[in-house]
Image 1: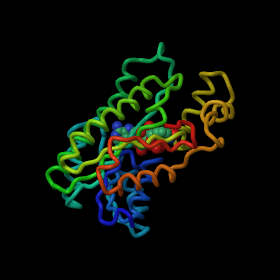
Image 2: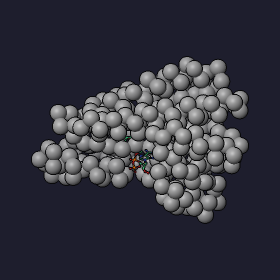
Image 3: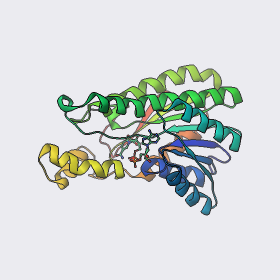
Length: 260
Ligand code: NAD
């Protein structure tokens, strides 16, 4: 029970990594808000958690929409009366050579990853400063916060940007006992990655098996995917860490693909 009675909002928690973090946070005693585009999908995760004895609600939040972000945070404060953890996780992937990339796709990536990170962090910091209890703001980065891959120019750019944002929040938040860190996973087999495998096979003219072996897991120490549970455990560690000693950092969970 490392997060007993802590209140956490997790964006993009209707699927993949965010969903597993919500489940693990609830197991550790936190009250969790599943923030995602679809209320139905969020409710399904919230129900799974409450059926297992945890506390969870679903809130509608398009992270690119400032009014929806603020309204969802207010809804969580009305329900649980505090906010200790904001885990800004919602994300997408767009695979394209830079020369073919449409400006609208570039902007979509920046809006979800960077506007979304800014808006969720701003709303969380306002609540945490008002409540005077401090808190933890965690961004879902990627190995692509540190390294580049072909065909992923907007994703790599956005994920690098999160490191800068977390460092500024670490400085501005310290006086209010607000910490900020970034988790940087390697490849995890979620819907986001399942979709990329055939897309990359087509773009590089190789088999899907080779996309996995020769691209995705090529530089890991053991040829293994990172799991949603690996990332969720890291998210628990960061959220439960008690002091400002660990702030402005990124932690990579990638089977050694990237070593800092
Ligand atoms: P996923 O597709 O399984 O889940 C993403 C979730 O984000 C979905 O529920 C989706 O509805 C939600 N979402 C998308 N746009 C949104 C918006 N505008 N507002 C609110 N919610 C929105 O993907 P995932 O693999 O679990 O990815 C989660 C995060 O982890 C992303 O930020 C991704 O970049 C990051 N990440 C994933 C991997 C991986 O290999 N899967 C590796 C490193 C980092």
